[in-house]
Length: 177
Image (cartoon, rainbow, N blue to C red; front, top):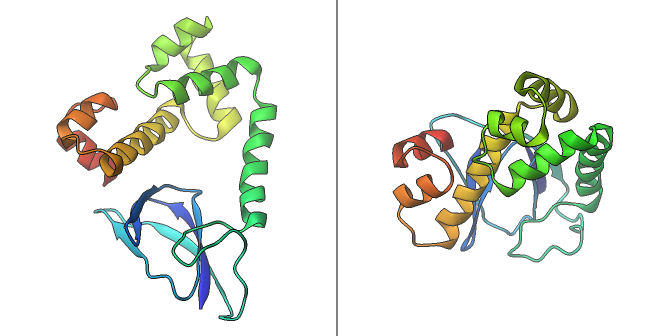
């Protein structure tokens, strides 16, 4: 049967053919019945919400037999939730998020200095707007950057760790857990 998987908690690497991607909470994928995939979990387990569909259900477009894709209605739901949070966030909090997106190694103190607010006020406002701490959000961005570099380059893990804000290769490996 085909199925839709939404990662609720944890993280894992997913392999479909030669493509590899790093999955974090909120990521969703639609799998056609004839597509083989492998989920590689670290020491910590992940929790997924899976929806199985009858085998004759046509996959949402633009799925290909070798692709992982998200049904349009689920993608819209996820995207809408993000836009709603973004709209409810004060402009300076949204600016903080954009700065983290651009440089996930930026510290809370440095971010607060640039935005001319107290660090604890920034931390409270960011959590209220996005449901996660500044550190959690930055860590997810650093992990995504690391995963992309691991998959797309031949750079040594130690170098990738340093370039993405981790202390060393061990720190990076433990973060993937």
